[in-house]
Length: 106
Image (cartoon, rainbow, N blue to C red; front, side):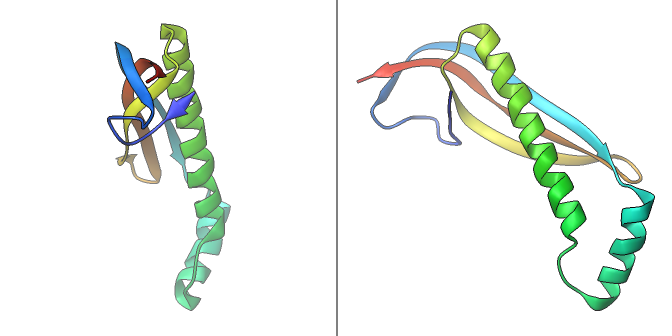
């Protein structure tokens, strides 16, 4: 499935717009990782456990969006956007959304 943040795909033509598709996940921090992060905050540098958690969360949200688009019969998603928000202390949502479309070669 083609996925792009742009509204057009070079060499392709949108033949059908199927609608909005989205995927999300909510992740909570882990107390053990918070302790390690606190020490890292003192010394400075990347908190790799959180970087990994956020990357996995993004991939899960993308997979869910692609599943929804595929169930509609799409072969591409255009105009993809990511957003995050805090839903409670220590937990964040990652939401990805775009427009499911059918494209063909021009």
